[in-house]
Amino acid sequence: VIRLGAAALSVAFDHEVPQLVIAGDSRITVAAGKALTVTGLLDWSAGLIARDGRLIIAPGGVANLTTASGKFLDGVFENRGTTNYTGTQFLFGRDAGNLPARIENAAGGTFIVDGEGDFSQNFGSATYRIDNAGTFIKRGAGTTTVVNSPISFNNTGSVVLEAGALSLNASGSLGGTFDLTGSNDLRLNSGTYTLQPGVLLPVIRLGAAALSVAFDHEV
Image (cartoon, rainbow, N blue to C red; front, side, top):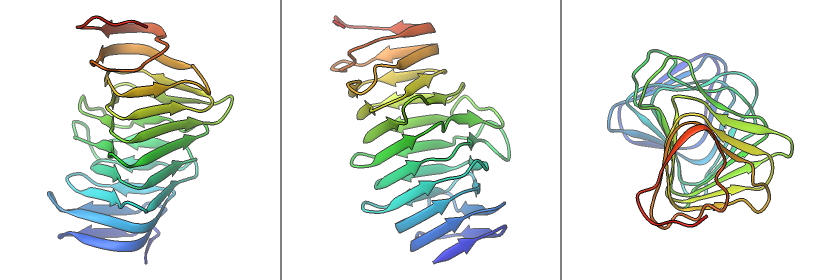
């Protein structure tokens, strides 16, 4: 078990840990090309995953992103297990701008946003993104999750709106499937979105966004 309060942890090699707690003003720095893998439970209530490295939630592992304190991402957060985002204040780019920070929800992974949790920037970068190849679920009746500009949302997996609204405010590549049975409140508010062949998207709701379709498509 590794429990970080306001401490800094540096990892220079690939490493696995069964339980990790990131709280307070903690900082995890993983060397470029290396990964810190959580095989059991991650509790992330505050703190930073620094640039270059990768934090992985292994298949069967669980990550809980809680509280209203800032959870900062300058590196890569890869989910192969189950991530529950029930807090708020998930922020890209703490130390600087122009970082390749991203969330990768891998095939077989489930990323659940339950409540008002948004995704925003601290310092800006055109390369911030959320890549979903697994299952991305929005829950919380009466709540809205906003993926704020400039964070792009790219889907090749499954997006499921069980309740509440999902508002995309930047851009993205929209493939895979969108299950809007529980709530059809998927909003493309701004930015440019490109539909990919084979996409299953039953409702398209455009605010001030641009939609690009390069093939015959019915909706």
